Length: 353
Image (tube, rainbow, N blue to C red):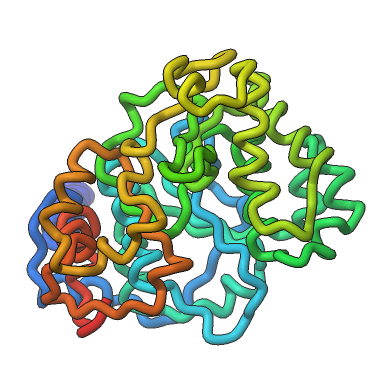
């Protein structure tokens, strides 16, 4: 009797394992696959209950080993919180192209993230196992032990005339100081993996000779002193009145000191100064801000696609393009890039992107 019962239990367990395997295979999504809209819609609509998110301070999956990609949402609004398609595309492309990296979308406001709408775009990026969405529970506690500890306690950040932008400027350095990795603006598309790039880099923007902080990599403070140099200068020279003072102007100033020159051509020719690498515009910003509308104009599609052919990222300058609506059937370069690098977001059945 006991032998028969034992045999029955073994058969039952094997059957359950087989069913679980079938279920997993059925719903597994390969990140390099071509997606069927109908089947994908059914997958992302499985979860309709309210989502819960962890704080980065207590989350199970922590950034480590420098193989991290960080995005930041520093808005203070807590109503009508929706992750927009282009932001979701930025996150998806980074996760898709860098499957061995952990990709983090960090909200500076717990309340904002807790009020986020459970949209198909949000569900789509959460299908990537390397995508994590966290909030910072207490920025004062989060910066303890960093160069920003006293600065945050001083209240200077709260009194800034540009609190959203300057909070993001500060948090990107805090995250890089603590964990190391690559920071990306949410108005980027990632085309090539970060594996082949040397750590500690920023890219020059064509036209104004500034080094931008929209695509930036730094090793953590326990591995390199460089991130501390940038962090300390931000704290010492913080100006809450000037929009770019704590971003591009800061990065440019520190790199000029490292390179011993203010001449942009000399800095580019040096390529590396004191361990920090300066990448040319075509690597991160192949389409400069002055030409940002070309990305969304089908008349320039072929020209733009040639310019971005060797770029690691493409910045699409949300400040100037957020009001441009594109139909998904549009032939612009942006839609072509989205189709290739954020296919799951493109599969969401909406008319405009």
